[in-house]
Amino acid sequence: MSGYTKSTTTDPALSYTIKEFIEIGKEDDTISYADLSFRETIGNISYITKNVFEDYIEEFKRLSVKVQLSKEEYLEYRFNPKMLSYDIYGTTEYYIFILILNDMCNIREFDTDVIRMVPKKYFTSALSTIYSAEKKDIMTFNSEHN
Image (cartoon, rainbow, N blue to C red; front, side):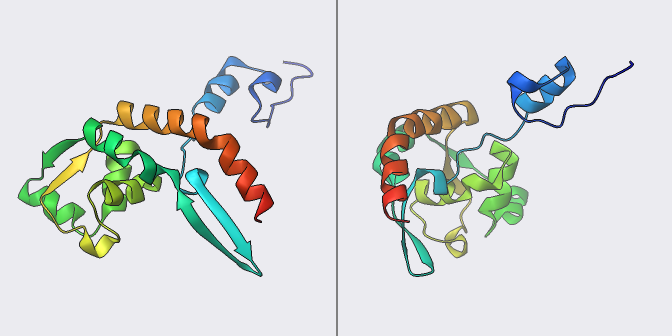
């Protein structure tokens, strides 16, 4: 095609082809732990003061089911909630939510053959709902404290 230039934009309103538009739609829109966090910065140190996921933990526990891991699965995921997060949700970002949901603080505690998991469609939908409800307050706090 004469005069055609491939778009490099990630804005759907500015894409030139259906293929580009489809690819833009596939981009990662994962809501991270940091997205749901109130953060403060003192000097050069930034830290999380609160994460709103924990305010909704009872709702997530109600959405969760207990999953029994086979011996092979246990060995694969033992101390590796990031791999489990990637295999279930398509991103490692949610490993911290898996730990919190299972009343664990760090990956060294992830040594069990029975875990609580929320099915992907419910999990991502619930995170999106929480983010929509809390985004304004989080952004306001973070802009005032950073």
